Image (tube, rainbow, N blue to C red; front, side):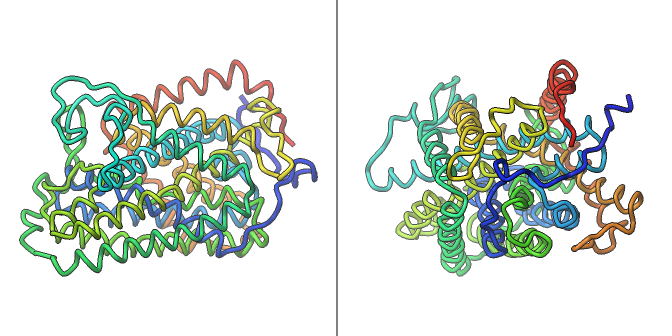
Length: 476
């Protein structure tokens, strides 16, 4: 049993396995904003409005507050342990091996499903943009299996099967960019982030003059709590917060860049906290403009809600611009999470939990093999899985990681209070428990099938750990 909780000493990698330090804090802020601002506000705001009505504005506040508490904990651990691997590495160094495995296994779930979710969201905007140009793709090549709702402008009365080809395409493009090199992909990411912020500013500038207070009534038609509806879906403000939560995370991808950061002790904290604050302000402004401009019932569950709102208020030309910009800029989210996923896989391979061959770096100093493998897995998910299902399950993996990092901060403060901490979480005995309890409550607000699949995923993970990974672990 003692072996299950053995802790790893973090050491610097030998030159042949070491990632090049090419990133500074502006790159990290851009990586964070690029990863955070994306499908959550461009696509999932419609899903959130469907579950909470105008009270989705408060859902953003709740989810943002919990993520802010988690971000402060991440900033402390990332600057204290400036190594790749994010929550997995922090757990291995602080809580022990078996917990690190569960966290790493959950991160595999989170990052894979986030990439798939964003690719599906990108597909919705890309298909809408092509439709505006009169270039329609065959319907069966624009979505995965659909069991209810609307698809291709018609109601689904029986299961309609398909393959989301645009989602597969964009994953392949981003994976190729990441294999090209970290510095090159960071530069392109920064340019696309600027485009994305300009696009959201354009939406606000056009939609805000159409703000109508009547669209906010009734404010919480489905209540402020979390109540199960048809199919086990959780409705109400907190039920929406559990899915809107997806819109806020992404700052954790910054912590996976620690090994490639020039001054990790300073730059990681700036990147994590700075990107979180910027994105919270952006979300609140965009959400208020969206809900005020059009009644939520008219854009809920749309694959391109912001573009739809613009068309409904008579701004079809601007809607086409927003759809085009979203199609161009949403890949920054895919880039951020595919980047993070490949780095977590890389560290787990270094530790012996995955085949060592996957940790081999290319001549450009990038983990090309693990990036390609990750891209193939998430491409299959994106091609065949509905948006709300994968977003909800991704949240479960993230909540697990956030709880683990907050626990790491508390355990580290108690076990080694004199340790060097370039960034210290303020009011840590208040902030960290808020992150833990808030994440646990959001987990209970996820639909029951999501909770079940998350438990099944980790049961499979523990089976793999005891049968394969545990005896291969190579603690430094």
